[in-house]
Image (cartoon, rainbow, N blue to C red):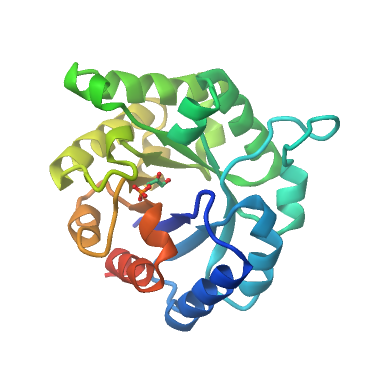
Length: 250
Ligand code: 13P
């Protein structure tokens, strides 16, 4: 059995006061181990959220990391720094990083390898644009993005990894993939991993991301191969995120 994981990707949102309020609300309601819950604040607030998750079941993650160890890389954050702040997970290859910051499959693979080597768990994001879906290339795109990392890192490095399927057209648009669309791609991703290691594939968590909200979470998570969600906008709303976590634990 795979324990569901719900991860909140706060993106570039929030401030000290809003984060205190959000975490107070989440800590008050999320106490069960039926579902793994993760929050990924902007890196400048990781230290604050570390303190707020000290007595909590909620885990801490980062939204991105440098593939370099340390040194003259102005503006970057290292894996050592994330470990220092008790981060457990790192989101890698988010479509916003790929499209707005030109992160290539190769760079994502380098970050993945560095993350595993440091002992953190990568959440590898993959997903197609609307154009790619309409051209019938969804599975080819997702396979290219996954194979780039599998080939560079080796399948054994996926033991603690999570894959997040985030169709680009569903991110921040209010347009969610239907449960059938999500299940189709999730099953295909699990098959891609199973071709390399069937046991690992059966244990790997594959999250859905893209306009997950309190109203649609249950029907998305009801699918056999959907093991939780990577949630953007709704993860900033206390009650909505709690409802999504409860849907995943049900
Ligand atoms: P939204 O939930 O706001 O669509 O964002 C999804 C996402 O990009 C999570 O990483």
